[in-house]
Length: 170
Image (cartoon, rainbow, N blue to C red; front, side, top):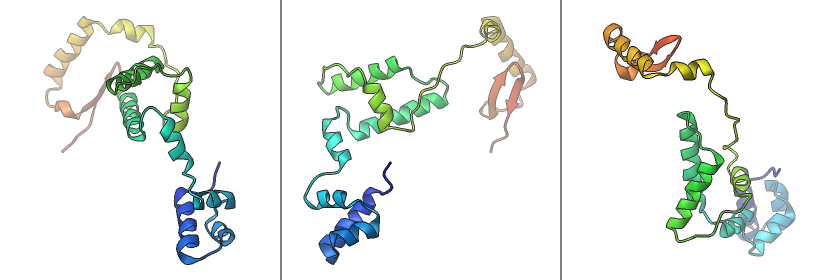
């Protein structure tokens, strides 16, 4: 794991180019490996830039997908790998790219976006699943209207077999 940032490399680069500092002293001052600074001074692009040129989705597209995944997960609808692949294939087709995704694309996507991680799905308890019937749903709304009509709908944030939890907003 590297202990320096792209800003450290840039600062070291500027110290050499504009301030006349030696490569060795600039590298030490900013905590950058000398070889990395030497490569930058010789015009070699950053690793991320080189990798980005070979990727089929732009960084911005991947960032939007990551935000969508996180939003879906917070809503309780985290996408499966096959759903994620289908979305990416559809995006690529819109851009005129009909090639299939690689077998390890998901693994690379997760590596590039560490805020995304896999979760093992949990089965819903049979009692809860069987209890979710039209009769039970209608019963809830009847109770909601008759006994809890004083609670504004925007203040209800959880309903389960334990009852109705409420919050008082503005």
